[in-house]
Length: 293
Image: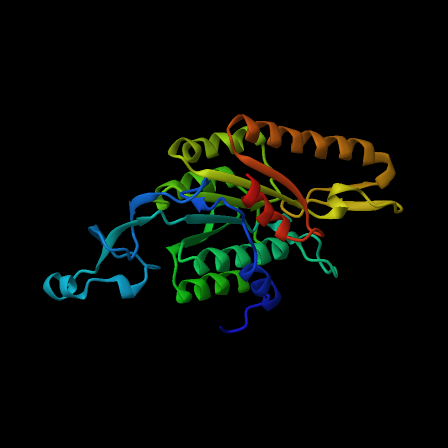
């Protein structure tokens, strides 16, 4: 495989031996595999399904193509396959911190998205990627081939922080693009209204998606550093405030805590998973969330 920045060979070696326990991700639920009428390669034929980009060309029935000049896949009765849909926030605020030795929030999220995509495809399951800021910037439909993984890693490689954020707009526009329910993983700093976010997530939850919200913040956002008079700039609106960190630390801490608690409470009430993550923690802790929730 060509070298990609966000897919570390050490991570691949670790993932090859990574155990997710007795449970397996199935149609968005960590509930053990069951027999299902889905695509696969087991003995009993189920039906034809039209080819979509990202499908394995080896599964195309070329005899049907020769007769109709249309590409169809033969699907079989087999164990259910996972579809994992990754939504990656690429707004300007995800570029924090700039010019730092630490990973930015976007870089951290990209490492995790690359590892998760590799792991899903290594199990012959399908993964999609949605890059968004104020709306959908790029959408890569679900696929399970090596080429699909290369395309996904290429998108991550060439991605840069964008403009403002509208997670709700993105989720609304992405709904018709996701044909099958699955595991929905959202990687974001969630600078949005929690009630609006879950209003946008409700259609996915009603369709049976398993939702994981990974709230990514830099340590300097979780706890303001002690320093002199500082200028704080909103990376998305350019609004700014000049203040001594110690004079606003208490209200800042209270706001972060309140926002996180609101997201956690709404997630719990809708049977979704929420985790607040520092970007200095190993992103393998996010794999642990998939195992235990």
